Length: 248
Image (tube, rainbow, N blue to C red; front, top):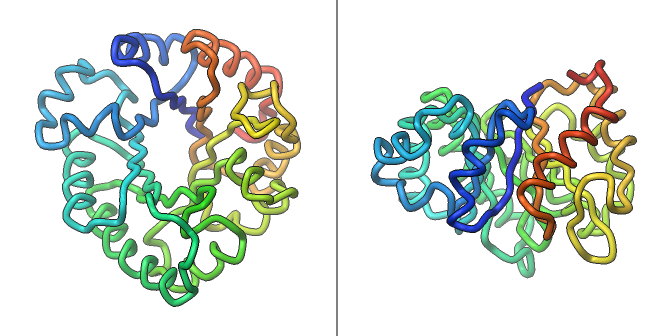
């Protein structure tokens, strides 16, 4: 299992993030869109900015509409900077999306997934609150139409809770064959929280990952209002205390 970290930070903190994630105990980053998109046409400049640090560009989280040309550019960038995982987060409301339209999106994204695989990149779809793939039935409809093996599923624990999915461990067990990335995030009172500071059964989630012998990415997706230092440190300490050795 790869242990990653992801957090939106102020521009002046980006270099701190690049410098501190490794010493804090994480294998890699999953960079947010704004942290890499300014360099999408200049990958060599991006590599210079990150100093080619191991894991710094291993995962990218791309938030956008499903535009073929733009996604192709991002895949090319990911290949150029050595990314292994590209997470697509669909900037489109779920409202009004029919099952047939969801299937069409699956077929469209499958083409990109197959192309990404040619460069050694796994393309993963982030289910998300109020996006076309939000609920379990959406997942079933989408992956029933997707080309088998072309797209993985990124599970975000807090977005599942916000979407009304109450039994997240059961969700993980049901969809284990397609899950390749987990965004571990806590949630309470309508807000993202540091892991262990919200209401989610995170221990039950980790137990479910162990039960299905999950061997993908486990990413602390830190989107609370905590500082970067606390996001890195508190989250890693919690993982050390709660992550069963059988899941690693």
